[in-house]
Length: 191
View (cartoon, rainbow, N blue to C red):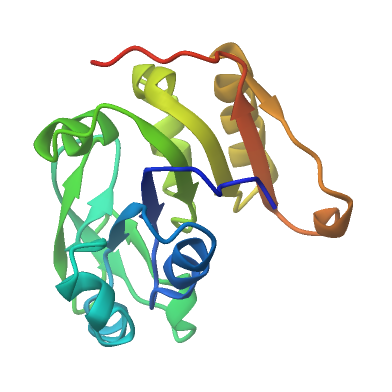
């Protein structure tokens, strides 16, 4: 696991019910964490699980999705609540969810620097990484779960081209979760 003991801003994209956020706050109690979760059912549990942290201002929960464009997307429900995703296609009993490009999200919340960006968004990472990734220059570390080999290839290429190093962890060799560090020590203060 990456060293996050001195981070200040974390984005937990695909926050589900908030367990990763609780883990990050345990390691870094002074961080501000933006929890982005598109599934309204999961979002209810996220708010319950993080009630004290939300009240204290440490956690900012958002019922939304990250996408390659601003607007809205359809929620694609799964019987497995952790597999709910987003799509632009019509789906049965479709539910519209607000979506943000990463750059728009960062601007909306006046986030100049992200120390740790956790991305577990059930395949939507492909559209984000195929779009403008200039926001990566303001990110220190990325933890990402890939949902296909093609998505993994696309994201690896973008991260490497934006000067990120893959950080292998022997304890995580048989998973689809990967950790990347920015090679740049100093980050610009604006997008």
